[in-house]
Image (cartoon, rainbow, N blue to C red):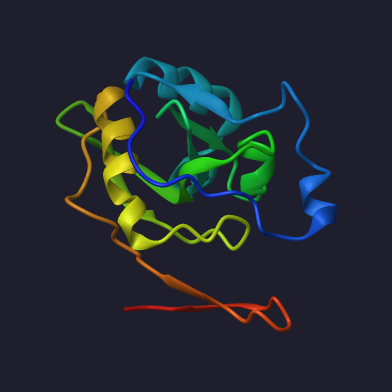
Length: 153
């Protein structure tokens, strides 16, 4: 897949970066079957399946998923991403579809312009999705103290 969009490097706390280990990245989702196989192991209960998952889009444009309480930097293996946030799914017409998706990741702070890379990764995996982020945030970073604030447009 051709790379699309800006790369976001990890800007969060060093102690969370330490959670990123080679080989422990989030599960690559290239098809609805990949999602079903992963979810059957990672989200065993209906409650877990109903919660949003942590996601990143790696620089190859592939969607990676991890359980909700996972850190984005661990899901990405510490590497830059094209998009990151939380994503929830539902069944629609007998197939998986995105119910909700947002760009909230204080570790990568992806801007709303990361949507095309996310949409491309979802399209490549055959996952129907909304026309944009359903939960969009804008990150503001103080250069003096490095604190991150987010706003909803």
